[in-house]
Image 1: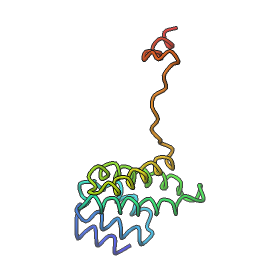
Image 2 (image 1 turned 120 degrees about the horizontal axis):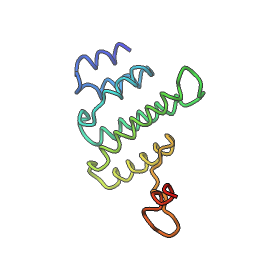
Image 3 (image 1 turned 90 degrees about the horizontal axis):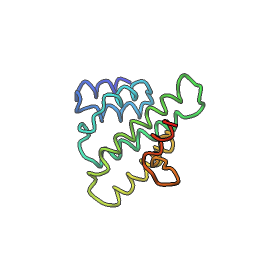
Amino acid sequence: MRVAGAAARRGGRAGCPQALAAAIRAGQTPLVLGFCRALSPAAVPTPEAGLELAQEIARFATRLRLPHGRNGAWKSHLELLEAAAVLLEHVAPELASEALQAQARRDLARLRRMCGTVRRPAARDPSGSPDHEERASVS
């Protein structure tokens, strides 16, 4: 725990990725959550480092997942998965190679499925009319 705190003090906002990684290694869920809330994608030195950090956050969140009711572990699990997904959304387009971009897209899809926030296209009515919902509410 002292390692994560020291990394945060040493680097300020720029030290947040290092402090986050140290908190993950130490297994300190409250610190990890705090650093994830404060983490700005701009603070990550390279997109590749952002990809690696997002993967670390996701692995840590997966360890928290069971049991659901243990001291808010499920809520922490979902919050960490969302933080990793947000980081991946920002760094994926900036990754140098197509292979890394594909890996980031796969990881992002997996995280979204785990969070239950898969983005699906809006439902359309069978006639194809875009104002179906408006007509349905007027009737």
